[in-house]
Image (cartoon, rainbow, N blue to C red):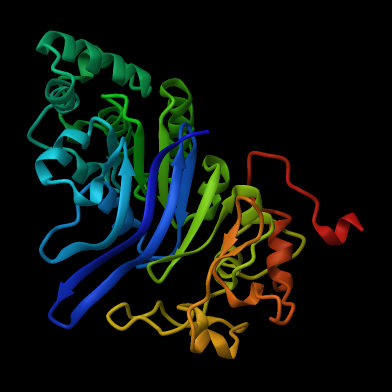
Length: 355
């Protein structure tokens, strides 16, 4: 399967009064046609900055792409001028933001807002753009689209507004759709509806999705592959099965352990990751997660770990995978939680149970 997007050694920094904040440090990944890649991690890990760089939305100043390539359609978006990015944004690469209310213009009808990318990028007539806007509202499941197209954002619920934002993002059938925590502002029931809507629409228009979230429960239901970010770097990446059921990085163990489950047998408590994320004004010399990890080795304090290839699709940035490193098993609470992880596929049997 061919790559729609390739990111190579991306570095993004921000100049501040205190110095240079290195928000993204050497991120590399690819996105294949029709797949969903989830990027997960706690606040400040660099998820949103990475995806905003893809869209050319890093405010300069103070932000800038220091190094790296963003390859899309034979172009390096990291080097494209703003005028060229305006032709790509909304047409080839679209984005859904966290809060649907702030994503919509309160002074414009939703019909005009859906028509805007159609008029700009597709060069449709107003009549054709309006017709297409009605079709898009039907596609995202809003009733009475002919009537509601004339209404303003405040006349819709939060879930309906997010459906409208999805319709705008999909108006030009983009090759890549970036969803930056699109369900964070919604309640659990509406969240499930939006996720189901996105999965259904992806099949219909065959787009590729980058899904940004801190909620691993969401990831299990929407993603094909997962990239775990920490301290501006990807520390583990692989298929959903690999990252959820065979995690190798202590940070991934921490994220999984902090997830609530509905399991009543284990009575497992939530596991908190001690400490705070690293100061990216002065990034750590070695492993960024070392000071928060009970599994840290001496070399973690002195030298940044390389990526180790666990399988063809699974990579991990940790010295624990070095052949000379001590053998470390995930904590028991993580193994217990893996048994009850929510997913939409059959859960693999753990090694202990298979014996």
